[in-house]
Image 1 (cartoon, rainbow, N blue to C red):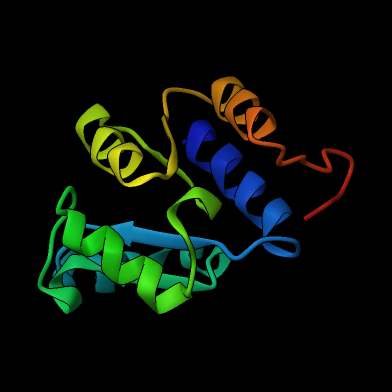
Image 2: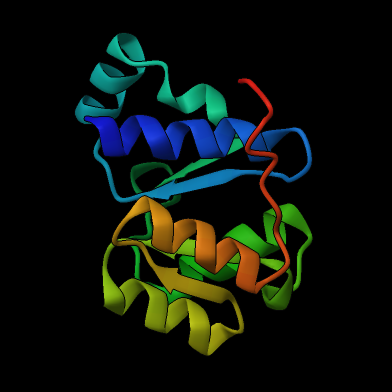
Length: 123
């Protein structure tokens, strides 16, 4: 969809300056299908999959495991997801979490935490 392509473009834009990770509750069959048919996963440095970690969002243990793996403090993380309850758990842990609803809001949320996009940069 156009919205998915816009998010993908933003992720590619940020990838050279930030470590981008994906945390997903996707199952192995869907992941393998998407990986084979779409190039979306190349936008991420690391992918955390619930079926591999044996944890699902919004488990606080999943978020802590990701922090440990990346050697990050919660306040160093910008996190967006389309479900409010996932953001609430991450924010309770100390993440800078925002509910994703559209591209303009995502850009605003990134700017709120000091993440600037190079919108002229081609990806």
